[in-house]
Image (cartoon, rainbow, N blue to C red; front, side, top):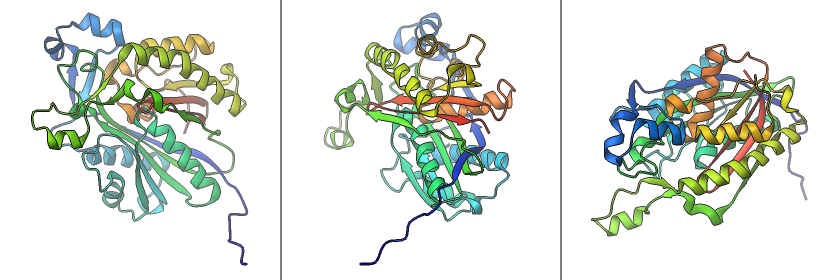
Length: 332
């Protein structure tokens, strides 16, 4: 029997480019509070959110992804024809099929393998893990990973528990072959028994058969999600540090999913991170952009000089599924 050919050499991989896109329109809390009988103070105290970006009605997930991707390609100094695969993490592309990734690749001028990942707020970190593995075994030399959401299309403006949480945006990264390791092994997992904590309210099948059904928006059980994230995700973040062989005091940045500022603050405390460590709290002005939140935060921190290229960053995404993924990466 013939033996299949496999990669004989494993390569290293790192993030070489980063890009972000925030829609032009800014929606402050004041535009949301009346519909949920709330206040700006209540929203800020509960979540840390002051405002969010909202995509234009005719601005699609692919439109936003294209903006972020072109910035990431420019950062890495690459042409789209050099990309071997395109991975788009999203749960708000409004078509079951085709995926957003092939259209994005085409717009960029690439015929690379292209597919979507549905892992909610952990989707970007899943994508980074997949890209790392592709580069390591030689499937691709450069992989484009995009986290993009148009969540306000899937938000119930009258749901008090979620109307203020979400925002729109896109973040993109290029993962490339490297001479040295730049992405640690990923710590990830799922807990499907708690799938109802963050979920689309009703299925598309129900919408088809019940014309009086409300739009199947994404809603969450806030207090339960908070407890899960605070007590479980800090442990996963510590596992990611341990797997990477990195101490907290060796980090240059902590870039968690932007779910809630109180969750972020508690994770910082539980992990024992240094007080002067730069920590992403972009949720204040972007709200929860799900799969886009980590690359958006990384792009801003680098652009504004809050962190320097070359340092180590711990990133962790967690959300609907319930699912999570975390890894330590070298900042591009």
